[in-house]
Image (cartoon, rainbow, N blue to C red; front, side, top):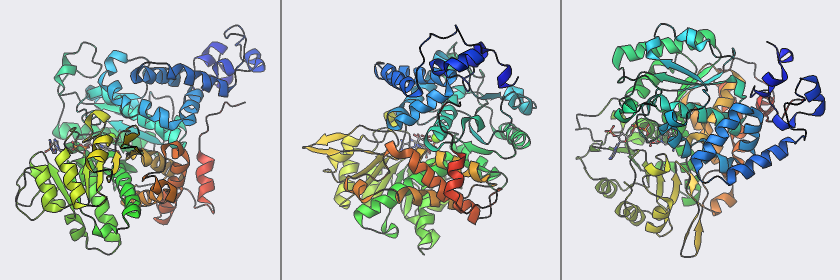
Length: 541
Ligand SMILES: NC(=O)C1=CN([C@@H]2O[C@H](COP(=O)(O)OP(=O)(O)OC[C@H]3O[C@@H](n4cnc5c(N)ncnc54)[C@H](OP(=O)(O)O)[C@@H]3O)[C@@H](O)[C@H]2O)C=CC1
Ligand SMILES: CC(=O)C(=O)O
Ligand SMILES: [Mg+2]
């Protein structure tokens, strides 16, 4: 049915076409809407103000999430106009930390479905299920299997909140048109017994499928996507590292794809470090990092930092030695027998160390990065040791959501005597210590993946490379002004995330053209190309 054949009632219930009380008198008459709406007509600006007013009065963030989620299902333009009007306020609602709670309670708060669910019980029919998606030109897919949702563990099909939230931010923060975006859950079961016992759990009620059967299902998904949406990019999100790493290796040279936890997180961490070095006036090759957590995010960040060090002429092996990893069994050293291949390049040639604080004392890092998903492991002793070793210690507790942060902003500033350069994965409010105000940084891959999505969309890129993430990191860091640095801000303010993302997208798009990976001709003005692709939340006439 074309939009002209729709009844007024259908139009009111089509989120992409609905304007609600903003339908004009002429539209109401032409579309058969008369009598279906109260007579007053509101502008989009007034509708946005009304939503702000409604949301600000709600007593908790999950309710705010639900109001926004209902709005997305009812009136897409207004939803994005609301998000764009105040990203700093709404990002923590549609994204971390609130989206974590929404995933945990997915079955209990479920309303309208969004995205595609691919249960492994439908093996052999993935293409058929994907074909039920109404849009035929999909360009950007965020997919999870729900096994490592933020730092909250296995949430099974409830993980769908993450692809939905990430894609909402691709549109809100970088203007990727929503009609090209598709959230997907690959449901191979869950090992979360509480979910399996919950009558309201909505996913497959079985334990996780592993091994060859799992990978064959992922293969079937990738093949179906290539057949149905040949210009699309697949962003892998929140897989456990036992699957995340092999999946990325399997497809990165075959299709347009990236893993956000490995590569996107690496980009944002490197950006924060590059800006921090403008505060400390040090070189990247003088740095030593110690990671708490040696999984997808830890090894991804360690590798990109190593590449950034190697770009300045340092031997890549020496660079990797400067990025040490620490996991549940202690420091990763060459003598350990439990190290996976993807961790081995960072293993240190020294005696094992079991306690994190002892590793800090022994390795004397200039920065510590928390990607363990376990809260409070950056203890007072750890932060104080970092502050003894460094005039300006870099302290990045990156684990999400807030409840999983390795330390709070207040702890980092207080225990370091106000000297920490701090960034956390989820936002912390400003802190006042001894009359001095600190505005904590948020180091989250939201600075990367929306911009990456826009660059890939605008250029119809064939592949995603590490050079693109190095470029993105530099493009973020260069947007941190001297005034920002004076205020200890190492990322561009979240209020400006849209402008920031367009700049990053332009730089990444240039990299894509330079690498010969674009499927559209190189324009004279790449910024104009990006701007021409941007979705703007305004009602069509
Ligand atoms: N800020 C951001 O933008 C991002 C933040 N993250 C966050 O990073 C965290 C980790 O994600 P990811 O790397 O994908 O997860 P992984 O599961 O791949 O890695 C977690 C790592 O932490 C280790 N670990 C677990 N418990 C401890 C402990 N008590 N002491 C030391 N190490 C421990 C694990 O060791 P072992 O395997 O031996 O158990 C593993 O190496 C999550 O909370 C996620 O939200 C992720 C992506 C982006
Ligand atoms: C931010 C993100 O991707 C994560 O915590 O997994
Ligand atoms: Mg993630």
